[in-house]
Image (cartoon, rainbow, N blue to C red; front, side, top):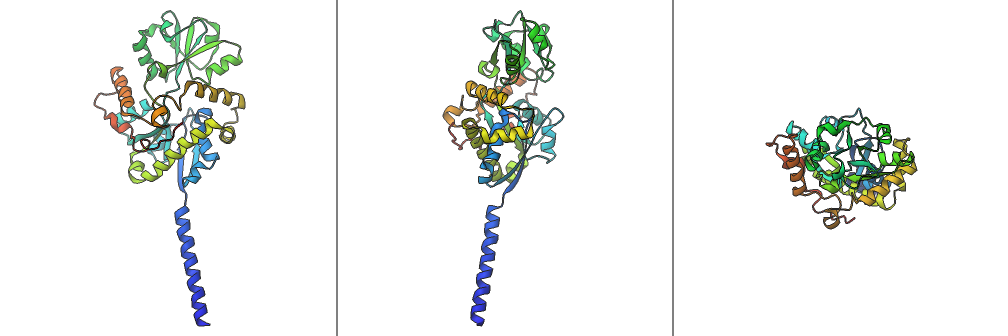
Length: 328
């Protein structure tokens, strides 16, 4: 009797130990990801990774928080309120110049999504010498210096863009900055025919919709960073193949976003090959290269946007994307 009791206790102890081991093995690492704006198709890969269980499969319990006009993502990242944020190369390089411990670990898109919307009578971005160009406050320290230098345009042509399309609609001689799925969509709904030119296709070097983290997390939890990067890029591939799951979460977070605009945005992303074009076509999605980052650094220094002594190689690391090999 005593022997059987001992056997039973031993089995219970083993079962408890095994359960504890399994729990430890399958514990999900909690991760907070902060986007750069209200939920939209251009964030779809992250929502898809959450909705389809791709993060969970990689051992991650991910919370996606929406950005917006009053949200300072870089501040929240460095304060520990987020583990990853949706970033922008110029912002990361400026943050480095200011001594912030941040770095880019992957990119969703090989191309930045900023571009120019024109009326139908424009054939190229080189045809704007007689045009009024609407530029937002945020555009002035980013794409505008590059644009002026490339095409020889002048400050006298610039007028403020206030995110109201009426000045553009009212004047066939006006062009304006735009995102491919936003302003052109609004124009089409208003019955105005337009053309759209992506700056990246003309040589504007920054990546689009990057993943930025802290140097601390990269150093202390590289495995978590690697799993988040892989799952996010897998999420993008899945979203562009069948976006239904991700779209449910996008509309939950942003009820103003409807199916028509989401479908328009996905179509534009596919046409412009932002996810699968460029280096991604041969090296795999999510990839970043030293050459591209050097181009962005050079442009910023030449435009007076960045101090030349800034250590630009700290703005990114390729360790998490170089061996991903997720072919789009």
